[in-house]
Length: 88
Image (tube, rainbow, N blue to C red; front, side, top):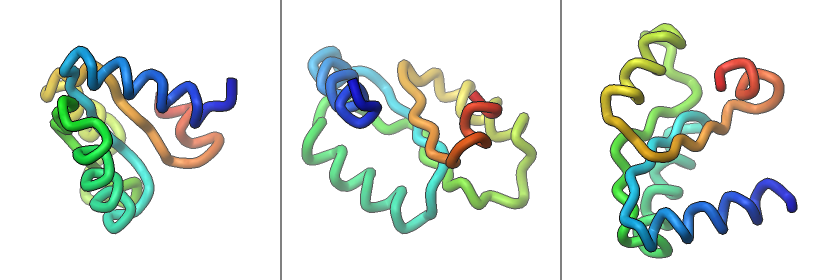
């Protein structure tokens, strides 16, 4: 299954269950668009944290802790290969 198809299935299930989501990566403008689109397509998912991938004032550990403190059920990471695999 291609990654995007798997992600859509996971998000659909998360929506049915009212789960919490964090997003890390991409640009601020893309994060804003994704947040709007996800709230329309998956209205029961609560986006608890959204951090762009160009955050320069925080370390990777600080970002991970900030996300963990929100206790999300899912974290979508879009940093590009191989950075996202290393971060995950």
